[in-house]
Each structure stands twice: as C-alpha cells, then as structure tokens.
Length: 344
Image 1: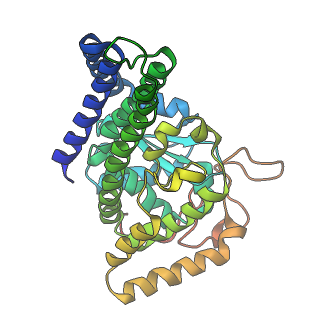
Image 2 (image 1 turned 180 degrees about the vertical axis):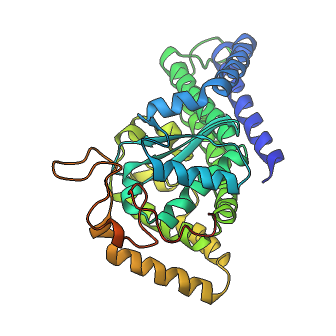
C-alpha cells in the first residue's frame, strides 16, 4: 500500500478545504477552515467507529448472541495475527459489510443480516477477512477522516453559495465564482475520496484472500454482493452517502452520474484479480464443486439471524436437518461444520 500517496491525498483535501475557506472569508477564512479541518481530524480519530456504527444502526454481538459469526471473525483475526475487533450486525436485507476504527486495537467489523443469509461460510469468511485487512492496513481511520472532510467541503461550498462568500475585486458577490465553487469543490473532494478508496480496495482484496486462504471464495462473494446490492436498497446508507466507500461493495443505488464517480473499483476487475490468485485449475475446480454443492442445499438449510418464528428452533436448539448440513453451511446455525476451511 502506498501510504505516501494517501498522505498526499489527505493533504490535498485539507488544502482544498482551506481554499474554500479563503474564497469565503479571505485569509481569516482559510485559517478558520484549517483549524476546523484539524479539529475534525482529531474528533474522527477518537469517535469514527462510534459515529459510523450508529449511522447504520449496527448492534453489537458476542460469542453468546452470534456464536458462529463471532467465532468466524475470531479465527480470522487469529490467522491474521491481529487483535480481536468488536463485532456488529446490521439489520438490512442488502448484503454488505464494512470495518471501522482508529487502529487494530480499537476497531470493529459489521455485516448485514442479508449477507449472512446469502453467502456460504467460506464466502463470508472471505468477506470478513477483507474487512480485517482494512483494519490491519489502517485504512479505516484514513477513509473515515476523508469522508468527513469531503462532507464538510460540500457543506462549506453550499454555505458560500447561499451567503455570497465568493466576491470580486470590489467586494461584491461574484455569481460565477460562487457557482464554480459550489460545483467544483464537492467534485474535487469526491475525486480525492474516490482515489483513496479504490486503491485500498484492491489491497484489502489481496490481503483478505491471503488471510482466509480462499481467493475464489471472496471472488464468488463479491459477485453475489454486487448483484444483491443493486437490487436491494439500504436506506441507512442512502441517508449517509459519505460512508458508502467504507463498504465492501457500494451500497448506494446506481443512478445517473453515480457510476462515473463510484468510490469502488469495478467489481469484475476485482474478481479477475482474485481469480488470478486462485492458483491451479485443480484448486478452482475443487472450490467450484464445493460451491455448487452449497447452492443445492442453501435454500433448505439457511439459518435465521432474526427472531425465530413460531415453531422454529431458537439459538442453541438444533433443527431437524442440522445433522445433514454440509461443510459449507451458512453461519449462524447450531451445528458445527465438518470442515472449517484452511483458516481453522
């Protein structure tokens, strides 16, 4: 990962914030903007994880409330030789996941109920390994600060437009400068945010595949999540678009210019890169055969991550078909899989 490039991008965003402040209030405005940017960075350093998790209604889980999911994250964290992060679940049918926190010692991972219902155990392991890779690479802090500054620049530009901050040589409002400021400042912030996110997604895919040991499983998961995210809306993500780049797949509905300024690299390119890591054709054939077996059993054996309906077994009580679940049983069930993958 090129941290020097990331530092330059963050510096560029801070400079852009100061430029907007200068156009609004001259030298004093630039100084105020710089102080505000510095304060924002400090605030998000200590509170980034809490803010993002609250935005998306994530609830904490532990070994008792979600034993299989929590155990999976713990095993992956041990394999990655990193501290155990806090684990959260988001109640939404859209399949997705993200990581947040200021460092590996103070981090959290969150997954939606939709992704747990859709993916096999191996696929979900690949996704959570990807999120742990973001934490290990210390991406989460940088991406959260970037999102915060980008949102503040947009807000400041709109403020300048409404109150006539951009002025000409005679101290009169300059409508052309105000319109340019309103359009270009948020656009520039978006481009910087996009550049940071795209480079880091490829790195997290690579390290995540190494942590889980199953690049083909992560590639399969990305394909399923991409299709699910485009069909199933995530209302909390739509209400907080500045956090979209933190998810493994863009959670926002693709409309109009969104594709042009996507914060994520093309999913097909990410899948191709992971497939190149997949090794020999024999490994690919083994994975594809296992995935096919899982698909034939998924509908009948899918566990529930929500409150069980009347007559259904609750957590800790095996279902009638529990003993017949395959090695690729989705997470959350009470039966232990016969095979836990190369990370166990």
